[in-house]
Image (cartoon, rainbow, N blue to C red; front, top):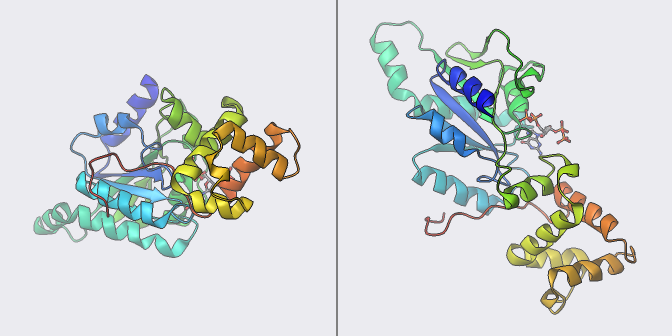
Length: 275
Ligand code: G4P
């Protein structure tokens, strides 16, 4: 942990701006509070990546929340190249004073440098590769690997560090771990599949009940069952008799593959303004 922190801290000294990559389905749970501690006054843009998989309303609300916290944000589907110029645009916007100062000093060309930082699997490498239109090896995901830092040109005025900064998920928070497990962001073996599925079922009935009703052809009376009873009922209903493990595995895959539509598993903290 300390080593990862030091590595990120060292890299931060080299850049003008941080691109904090989070999973749009978990805008809070896929953040690491350590970044806020070490980033100090450095400008940042929160990139809500995998926005194609997240609930668009929730994404808009989270963007409003980040804005209210003073951070610029961008919802992104890094798999679509066409969306990437937005990163250049927002970086220029956030750093406009710095860029103006460089031109005022008589420089022919302003230069800004950025780093992608985030927990594993949020899409850092995908974004980096897309930004520079190359296939960069995923060396940065192995903590402890040190190599000379290199700058990759996005365009004449914008460079990114060739390896992302890796932070660790907030494993100490059980719910955060369960959410990350549900979306496949951490190894499946770390959490019991039935616990993860029970959490997912409970979340869907709380926030996306109609989607649960539609997917399994349920009546609203079925949703009065307790979570374990609902799981037993659905296991039987889907022809799996009493094989709760298999139902759990299927349910988790269904969530990840979008059977219930685009979902967001973090709610805006209470008291914060909504979009
Ligand atoms: P990392 O460097 O932060 O660890 O993440 P990486 O870029 O490797 O991305 C992790 C997975 O997420 C990759 O899938 C990648 O294709 C996918 N991904 C990245 N950005 C987006 C996005 O905006 N939308 C969607 N839908 N997917 C995205 P993978 O290599 O197939 O791995 P896996 O997730 O199937 O294991």
